[in-house]
Length: 431
Image (tube, rainbow, N blue to C red):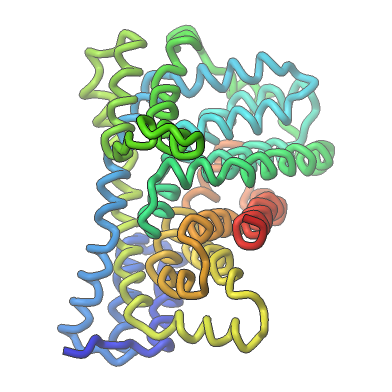
């Protein structure tokens, strides 16, 4: 039986409908499903074929969903125990007020890198940022850019849903994708600090009242030595295989344990180190609850990715790239940029980009690891638009109006764009 090919017009219409419905405040999962259904029907599928397209699409993300759910244990431990807050406070204290912007960006980067979602990482560091910003006379614009830019840098080297999606999209080990993102992430951090430092006197300042509301009681948090156990165990276990491969040590390179096992194990070891073994059910349940919304959106994204995959849209895009004469290598970052912008989500954007354009990207001659890193960094460029939850969470955490929050987006795009350019040059042309 010949495979059904949907018209690219239906795919674009479905994606547009999903975006419009998300902007109209309909639940994102239903928006994505409705967009996929209407797009498939517009593209020429009948009712039965439309169901098959959605089922195939959602089945394609199940591997990612399993690993995201497993990551919930580590995320729950870091958030519920206060370990993430301990790490953030320690970094800011270490650098002092004179290097406040670097300290805030680095704190958010590290917390995101160890498995905390970027919106949660910003929520954790925001009270510290408000207090520091008030004392040092740093504007909210510069403060949020420091948090958001640092979070973006940490997000591309983390065991978070977006990195898991990038790895699964190209059948790679999570640790390899995390490691490949290190150089772009460092460049992103540097640009964040430079641009935020230039903006520290621009925009609205933090009031005394906002700074007082930002004070956090740290008396119940674990000490730093215990707080870093869970992320340290996760990083060590995840990096054994790639380090062994790089160093040519067969015993280490033979250590192939999936992140689905490593992340929960690291979380449990961290809990025990902090003397919180009795809270294993509470912390893991909290982590699972944090992951539920992400998992549902991933399933919805799988549906619309199924629509785009079943269409000839990727072929049309490839045709445009070939006709324009630019290198096919650029398809990977472009796909990441466009899909993340459409959904205002890094992880959803990566799912759509890999599911819809993955084969086309590889057919252009791009290596899987290069493709994963370029799609992943591309998805960080304009992923903080108002139709996504990160925009509103970050605005609320920094006591900013919608207009003030909109003003941060171009600077966030500079950070994400830097990481995408570095990744494209490094993996698309140099290595």
